[in-house]
Structures are given as structure tokens and as C-alpha cells.
Length: 105
Image (tube, rainbow, N blue to C red; front, side):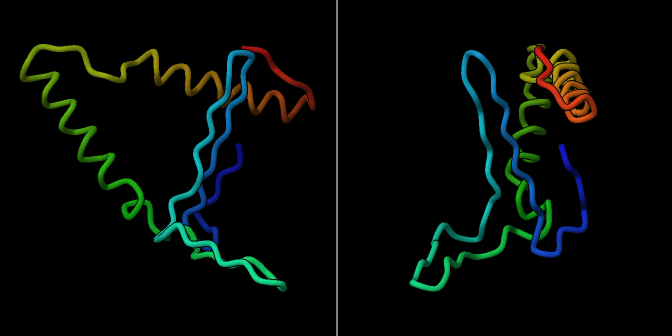
């Protein structure tokens, strides 16, 4: 895990998690999906620069789900255990880096 809010080329957030049962990968968001290749290089737009540009729809959906859960006495779609597991994965990644070895979860 590497964090920086100062990436000069945009808001860079990529993540990959690998496990014995599969993997998940999330790439950066770009203004468009065009990638132009020629004999000298490959070009594409920079990632979206500001987190609100990337996540506004997610924030709206998150708030709608929370309000729906409160008004209709339903469980929230993402709970405390989900948050705890994110911390567990982050700590395992840090331990893997520090000890230069895989860490099983």
C-alpha cells in the first residue's frame, strides 16, 4: 500500500488483492478510455485529478443506501466487519512489506 495526495499527474488510486480463491483489481478512472499508440509511444489522458470527480456517484449511492436502511429499518450494506477487514488487509500488506514475505489472511 502506497499513499500520496501529491501525485502530479492526477488522483492515482489503483489496488490489487490476490487470494487463493481469486483476485480483484481496480484501476484509475480517466476522462475517457482512449489509448493512442504509435511507433514512438503510447498516449492516454491523465487520471481524474480530484477525488470528488471520481467518487461523486459513489458518495450519492452510499448516502441513499444509508438513508434507506435507517428509514426502512434494514441493515446497512457495508458494516463494521467490512471496515475491520479493510484494516486487516492494510496491516497485512504493511507486514508483508516490512518482513519481505507473503502474509496469509
